[in-house]
Image 1 (cartoon, rainbow, N blue to C red):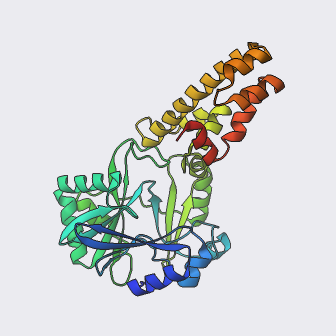
Image 2 (tube, rainbow, N blue to C red; image 1 turned 120 degrees about the vertical axis):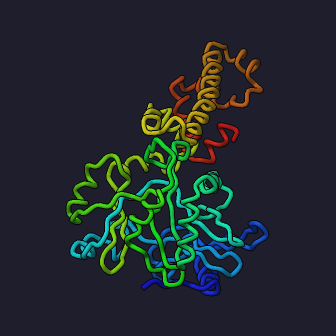
Length: 353
C-alpha cells in the first residue's frame, strides 16, 4: 500500500530529481540523513513514487518514517472533487496548525525533531516537555517497541503559524508501522489513558465538510481518510485567507502593508506573544524610523534653493531621491519607496538588513 524506500532508493531519487534533497548532519556523534522536498510538484512525487520523502530520517542505518505526502482537495490529480466525492470516508480529524514533531531513537533515548532539525526551538521545547512528562515518554517507548512511530504537532502562542492558539500543547496526530507504513487509525483511547491530547474526530459527510469549509472560522481544516487509505487535506476558506498573509512574512510584505494602510490586517490575527508578531513590529519600527527620517529630510530639501540644496545635501545617501522629489513633487516620495521595496532584495537593502 505504501512504497517505503531504502536509503539507496532515496539517494537514487534525489540524484534524478531536483525536487527532492538530503540533509546530512551529525547529532550526538551519530550520522543523520533526512530526506525531504523543495516543492510539492505532484508529477515528481508520482514519477518517482516518492511520497515517503517527507522528513524521512535515517539514524545511521535505522529508518524513521515521517507522514507521507498527500494533497489538498483539488490540488492534484486523484485529489479533485470528482475523484473523491463518492469515496467512503473512514475517519475525519481536525487538522492542527502547528509544527510537525517526529521522535527518533538514538542509542535508546528519544529525541524530538521537526521536519529537518533537532535544534529548532520547537524540537528543544518538546524535548523539555518529554523530560517533564513521564507518561508521554512511556507511551512513545511502548509505541516504538511495537515497531511503530508516533507523530505529533506542537503549537504555542510563541510559535504561531496561522491559527492563534492560546496555550502550549503537544498533540498526537498519527501512528505508523515502521516497516509497512500502515497507519493505526484508533489510537485516541490509548493516548487518552496516558494523558496525551489528540485532534477532534468528526462524523460528517463529505458534502457537509465542504459547506463547513466555507464558513468555519476557528480551525485550519480537516484530514480526511478514505477506505482505500488515501489521505486528503481540506482547509477552511478563513484559514486560507489568513495563511495568504501569515504564511511567509517578509520585509517587503510588511512594508507594502504599512504603505497601503494594511498593517492591522496582520496585527489583528497575530498573537502578540508570537515570534511573527515580534518580527512584524521589529521590521515595521525599522522601516518607519528610516521612512520618517527621509521624509523629514525631504521637507527640509523642498524649502531650499537649488544652490542650497546641492551644497547641503550633496553627500546625502538618498540625494537622487530628494532631487527627483524636488522636481516632481512630494507625492513621488511614496511612489519611489513602493517601487524600490516591492521585492525582498530591495526591501532588505532599504532596511540595511
